[in-house]
Image (tube, rainbow, N blue to C red; front, top):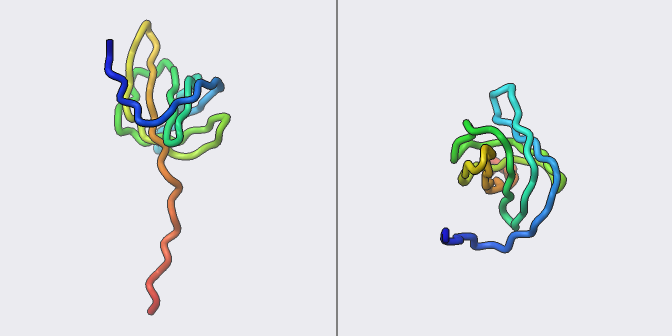
Length: 96
């Protein structure tokens, strides 16, 4: 039995997710499996999506950027875990 390394509670959920890799025209359509405070899991068919890839996502809970944390291929489908990137904070220039 695999070791569960999750550090946050997950909430099962459903919904369509669209993933885009910045700079590439193609997008990946998937189904949301669950959510946590800092990430989500999606089932899709894209076998070329690599760990540490930054994606832009649109999902029922919002949109933003996330990083592919891991992938698992099982029965012809891919399951990927994503860590949500925090929104960029505006930088304030130092006083002159």
